[in-house]
Every structure is written in structure tokens, then in C-alpha cells.
Amino acid sequence: MIFSLFNSKQTIRTMHLTPAIVPVILLFILAACDQGDAEKIADTTVHDGSSLEEIKKRGKLIVLTSNLPTTYYYDRDNQLTGPEYDMTQSFANYLKVEVEYKVYDSTNEVITALREHQGDIAASSLTVNDKRKIEFDFGPVYQETKEYLVCHRSNKHIKEASDLKDVEIVVAAGSSYIESLQPHPDATWTENTEKNTSILLAEVAQKKIACTVSDSTLFDIERRYHTELQKKFTLAQGSKLAWMLNKNNDKLKQSIEKWLKNYRKNGDLSQMLDKYYGFVEIFDYVDTHKFLARVKTRLPKYKEYFEDAAAKNGIEPSLLAAQSYQESHWDPKAKSPTGVRGIMMLTQPVAESLGVTSRLDAKQNIYAGAEFHAKMKKMVEQVAEPDRTWLALAAYNVGRGHFRDAQSLAKKLNKDPDRWSEMKEVLPLLSEKKYHTELRYGYARGDEPVQYVERIRGYDELLHQHFSRKDMQTVLNNLMR
Image 1: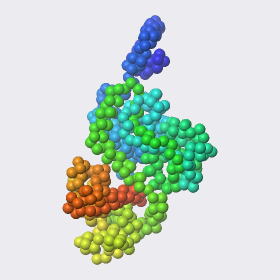
Image 2: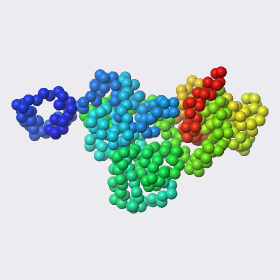
Image 3: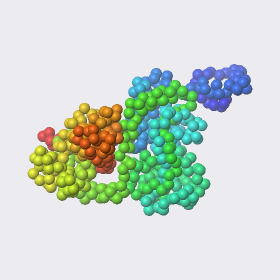
Image 4: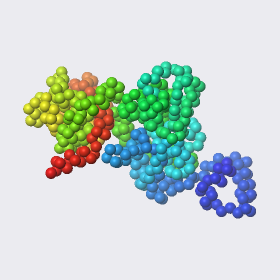
């Protein structure tokens, strides 16, 4: 208690002690401890510069985070994004302050920085566990994940905990995964102090290390890029994620609780989770391998068409190409049992209305598909992005009539028809008799547009690197000449 008190930066800075007065103060503190007031003394210690009052006074919230797809990163437009970025921006708006981000390479470094009072909160996809709760406080839980042992696909399957014996496991130092491994006496592991889990997952895929441990959200994202990754064993169920802050900062903690309650109530939390994770759970190993191969063999033949048609219709070229792959796998002669044809799988009426003379002509089909996509976006022009795009894609797939039915049904169910995170729950109801008998256009396979949109989102994410912003700007400049 005495050591903690006299090592507080705030105490050192505000108390000017002389040799004569030190014994008096020590006696006072010891007396207080003898009276059972030690906890009271600790409770009055507010960490330097991180109190709610200090944050508002400086007009800035200092957030400690890491550069990961589950936390904070720059997107392809060089704009900051990520789950923790979105949430901390919302919290800062709630406090009416700006945000300063301090970015670290690992969880271990983030926690060390918080311990040294280099920031106000640590927002880095941090798991709540007993060890951390001894030293730090946590805000309310905003997400639950699982923790997997992840190995190369070629490694043996692990059916039970005893199979962990002799398995090489490398984990990020300071991560919560260490605590999840500890109950398994047969498991041995090495802590890496220099690499985060994202890098370790890449090394597993490259067979540089045998296995690592990852939470389910990061695993779902990374396996789309490293298809050889496979979960072999579930170490923890229901791991809880929350922001971490230093002890004795009750007002800041209460503000986080109030903000998150509103964030959840307004549907912002579910929308954020859908934005970053809504599509990643749909994963097909064989399909993804075929897709990555066709990016090399088929996409180059049509890339210029996708770029030009997308630019003329205000669509991202990677998205248009992703939609086309979902429709036909970039096969210009594709045909479905219902009669839709071509690389964008157009119906005959739609093709005729857009002046297409041959649906088997890839160029005509792509330009018509882009124009029809743009028409669907106009139908929901009042909706903000990215929801506008996801809703337009759903309408493209299920048809305008059924889509309008779904919007009407959403309103009846007190769902927001302008939010994809809510409409993806309503659309499958179009196939239920309880609902479709009351709708103008009747029955529809409502789960199909949901799968359709989520798969396109997944393909689009993988295609970003093949359609750079520089290439897109060149297309736009050519159009303006």
C-alpha cells in the first residue's frame, strides 16, 4: 500500500516532502491501515491524466490500440477504419472530445503502455480474464468470441485435450491465449514477444510454425487470405471482449457503460459487427481456392470492362467484379435453370430493357449488369453507405417486388428497413407461410439474397488489391476527357 501510494506519479508531483515531515506522514498512513482504511486510501487515488475530468479538460481521448483487422487499420482509400476505431470515435463524440491513437505492435505492448499511463483506455480486442482484472478495470463487454488452436490443414486433427501433447504452439506474448492454454497440462507453448497473432497465423499457413492460438474473429478474417489455416481445437468458448482502463477511474468507466448502452440500443453495435464480421463466417475452402485461381486466369480478360462499367455507374470495380463472380464465376456462357444468362446472369426482360443484343457477349452483359446495379441503388438512394450497396445487391438478386415486401415486413416487425444488419434477419422470413401469405408478391427464397450479399462482400474483400485506387482514377480521368 505505501509503495503503491508513493510511486503514484500524481502523488510525487503534488506532494513536496521534507525529511522532517516524512515520518509523520508514514505514521499517519500506518495508523489508517491499522484502522482498516487501506482500501479507502487506494480508492481515492486517480491515475494521472486519465480521469474523465482530465480528458474533457484536454479535449482529447488517448486510445491505446494495435494495427489489426479486428481493431484499427487503414483501408484501401487510406482512411482509418476497424471495429475499435469505429467504437472509440463514437465514444469520443459522446464525450465531445477528439481522439489520439497510439498504435503498438502487440497486445503485450498495449498493456504495458496502459500500465505506464500512456493513454486513457486500451481498445485492442482485449479479452476479459481473471489475471488482467487483478491489475486493471474493464468496461462492459461488447463482443464474445471463441479461441481456437489454429494449425496448417495438413496437421493432424486434435480430438481431445490429451492430443495437445508434443504439438508445437507459438502464441503472442501477453495475450489472453496463455491463460486459455494453462488448464491443459499436456500443452506446451512458446511466447513470441515480437509478433502479433496476425503474423503468427501467416507463419502457420507458410509452415514456418506448426500452430498458434487465435480468437474466432481474427481467424475467420485471416483464413480468407491464408486458405491453408484450419482450426484444430477449441480452447475457450464465450471469451468476452471489452476496453481496459487503469483502476480507480470510476467516472470514466461509468461513461463507457452509458455510451455502450446507447450504442447497443440504437443498433450501432450490431451494425458495426455486421460491417466487419457479417460476411467472414461464410467460407468454402474449395470455392476460395478456385476463386483465387480464377483471379489469375479469368479476371484479366474482363478487368477493363469491370473498371469502365463501374466508373460510369458509380460502383466500385472490385464490387462489380465480385458480384459477377457470384453470378457466373466469370463464365460469359453461364446459364441457370430459371433462364438467366451471361457473366452478370441477366434475365431476358432486363437485358432487352438495357439494349443488350446478346447476353453471351461479356462486354454487353457487364455494362448492362452495372447499369441495373445502379438502378437498384437509386431505389434506396436515401440510405447511407455501406448499407445502400448491400440492400441494392439484395434487390438485384431477389427482385424489386420481393425486396419492397421485405422492407414493408421489416417495418411491421419494428426493424429498420434501411439497415442491412436488420434486413438480413427479415429477408429469410419471405419463405415462411406465416409472413409471405400477407405480402403482395408472396413467397420468395429469402435466405438466398442474404447468402448472395455476404458472398459478394467476401469476394470483394479479396479483390481489393487487384483494383487499386490509382487504376480507378485513371479510368475516371479518361471518362472526363
